[in-house]
Image 1 (cartoon, rainbow, N blue to C red):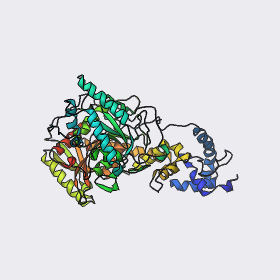
Image 2 (image 1 turned 60 degrees about the vertical axis):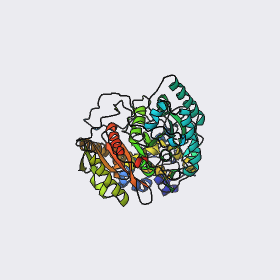
Image 3 (image 1 turned 90 degrees about the vertical axis):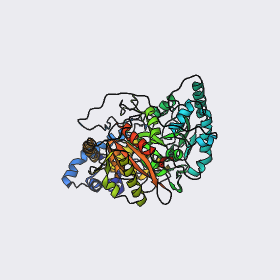
Image 4 (image 1 turned 135 degrees about the vertical axis):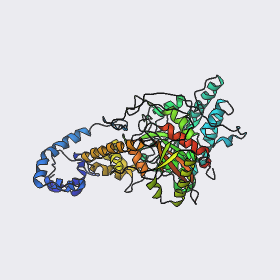
Length: 559
């Protein structure tokens, strides 16, 4: 084929990463190696990256650009599984910061529990901090709780579209074992015998792991994710694999759209949609979600539950689908902050199978002394709230925190030219490189401009230089946040705000707390952000807030 047969589309699709790659055009035969990139093709392609090279410069580039084509072709002969990480990794600790030495302390529930009701159904909405001592005292059996939640999942899934797979056989086996151990005097801790749900990007041996995508709906992985294994070791009972948006995008999966239980004609607004919806409606005792850029905070806020997005590297991601190596995080979605603490205590820690994990201390319970804590509030973000009901609820929440004895101080969050989407989309495109090149992206249900198929393709045009530059700016942002956090113990911000992007980029922990409702009955939410590896403090603040408010204990009507 002569150079004259190259189209502009071929020129643009030849641009990949930091150099020029001859990516196969969709519905066209692979390009033979003798086809050459010309100066005219480079002239068209350079517009995509916003650069302007002279003709002599383009001609000088040609030899190495064409040599790169063979390298890229050879590189693509190797099939890379989604689980294979790059040899570089993100570290959220800024320069000059030294990690604390590891320490440990068993987590225990501290909230007083009421009398166990005579009707089993009345336990459905009990927080984990109540269920745990009831199970320990054998006032309710794990088998009975498991059957209760399985029945509710099957009863309400048609409304919510939140279940991908039931793990009933496994659940009943785990529940019977939990009851036998309790009868023999063995107690594994506050998760012993408690039914839970897993976001279906977590591998569970013997069950499908669909990632919410039509292309992967029959996928089975012969392993248990580390979080799944750790929860089993803690005695928890897995009852279902819950829905996520296809390949962890929003709330639409191959089986439908997971609903906001407070307003069923709307979605749950985040890829941990099934985890948040099932927890909000008393279908599980707790759930595990994941976040890359808002997928724990947003659905937790939408569904009126409490969600903890831990510090990057706190919880192993082994056995979880990779979307972005430097942004992915796993965390609990529960009915209360204390519940999140009890689950987090069981799943955090070092895992040799995930090189980003760290052995850092987590203490729970912590002292109730809040007097003197300096808690910032992102004044500008609260002022910019467009939802008036959320704005009013946030203002009331600030007053509640002030009444708890903390010192509220206005803060301004650092502003730099953030590029979280550039980093996310570039890493996601690499994670799903073969998926795109083999046209499996055509199988996804959502095919609009802002959906993964287009994002994966678009990311092929991000130069490697700009990806590195974005991460260098990220380093400066981490240092900015370290300076800010050295002056305060934690800070408050609206759950739907710039803060989500900022804190995901810098790896800081965030706790989403329900704080009221709007006139249409939708929950509103406020978030606490803490220092790196300081989940204890934001969870303690969240628990104190929930001890004097009841937003977290409200139940969606009809469930």
